[in-house]
Amino acid sequence: MLLADFARLPPAYRARRVDGLASAIDQVAERARASHRFLRYQWFAAALSAYGGAAQTLLVEDERGPVAALPLMRVGPHALGAAAVPGCYWPFRSFPKAAGLDDGGFDALAEVLGQAVTMLRLGPVYDDDPATGGLIAAARRRGWVVIDRFIADSYLLDMAEAAQDGWPRNSTLRKNRFHEKHLAEHGALDWRFLDGAALAGGGFDQLASVEEKSWIAARTDGRDAKFTQTGHGAFWRAAAADPVLAAMLHAALLTIDGVPAAFSFDIDTGAIKYAIANSYDPAFAKHSPGKLLYYRNLVAAMGKGITKVDWGAGDSGYKQVIGATRGPAIRDWLIVRPGASAIAARALAGVWRRSGQGH
Image (cartoon, rainbow, N blue to C red; front, top):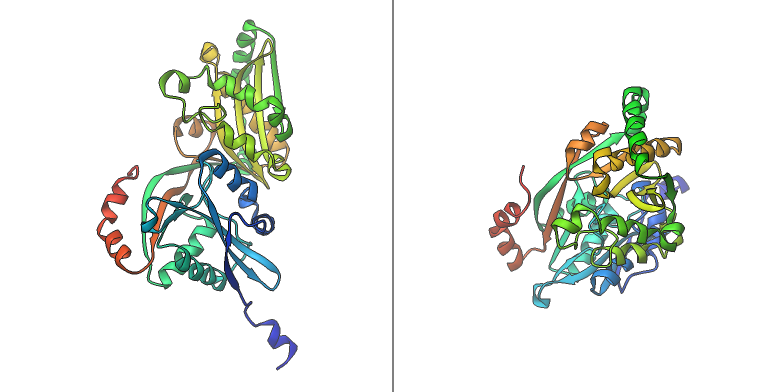
């Protein structure tokens, strides 16, 4: 056999279970496509710290090293054998895998998954998520039952195309300057940008102070707030402990006379900006401080090479006004190993699907 023939042989994959979170998660994340590089060890560790649970990691390796890492935590009664991927509510609950991983790598992952659990919940994730799609396809090749439920449509802003179309329009900028002029009647305006280090050094507390005055505190129990102690604040503070992950965290902040009045918080990875959260003090709602800050944030992002803004789900009205269009659907998936559990899952598939948001 010639050397060239050896070069064409498919890679040999090895899959194994690791107790806890494997340190190799970071190695895989570094080989992932840019959109998934935030799925680092500390991302999953922060989720376990904030929300509870114990993890194991399914690791796939080839001759070059780790190529896929699937963190799992047990959910429900132990006898059920069910697991889910730990993570925060957003951008999505996927797992890192090396860019270009082929079917053989996913087959190895599915094989060890079948030894570890009976049922796995994957999601919410996008329809075009490469890691989830590859694992689901491998599970189907093994006869697993796969059930999905629709959560929402995503909304994306193509910044490159928007720039070619003259975004933001001069008319929009004039309206924004008008609102800024009247907003300034309330006090001195300061528009600033915070990186992960600034957020960890007190910036998260500033964002939380805005949320504590916002509609989410007035109309809900506050559990969905992103940065308060009663919301998801513990997660983001723990995630920022990883300097690589912290470098992806960005916030735009408006203060009025030194008091936080509006913020926009994002994850920037590669040329993609994931818009995670934004809020404002309703005392200034008449002058649209959130909208003003968002435009400043997006213009700054465009100048730094961001070409796509991913707004995720929810409240599509203002996103479409800014220029976002509908993107991939967001779904939750159940994949169930063949056997009695699969038979039961197939019978209850309608219940799972109806528990989604519907179209």
